Length: 259
Image (cartoon, rainbow, N blue to C red; front, side):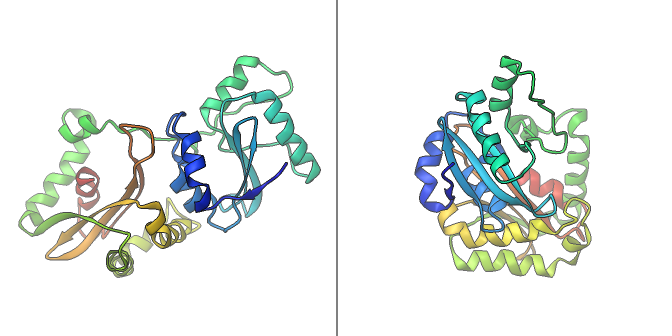
């Protein structure tokens, strides 16, 4: 199998392929370069018009991992990938495989392949018009946090887009995060501290990846920001990071809503 480095030069070719599939978050061009390439060793091979990826998995003890995306000739593709794993004395196991490939595989009902749901590796879909209206029981906690925040800081709040392709706004994001001690005290969702590395990588690649960013300012100091990007699939946005100074109660709710 002929693997090559996955880098910005692949962008046009990959986006042409990716836009005909559902917008899986892990496999957007931005997230591949930021997360799966966090160790600068993401490689790809094209097999039967599917993209096969090899990388060091930061969430699995730094072990070499394989995944793929696509929906063409799934059994033959899987055989070729398993042969590659055998050649490298690795277990016949793929992770993060998206539904488009898994569902095609399940339709064929192969006897010797087990497809297992990964409950900790899912995309979360938010209904933007519903969230914007924020009505009903499901949005009670969102409204409550927002109301508290606006009641206490409403006259001092300003929300504006940032341009992360400029050095000035990238420095603003970095300096703000270092000022918020509470960001680093909340480690339950990022015990390996990988997200900080990912944000740093995203900012370095911002002139190429062109992410969107919104900042929330209180008395002209930025106290929260969100980073997201627009995949080639229409009517979708993919959220990357929301970071806040949690000394301000309800700030996450407002940053989510403002985004």
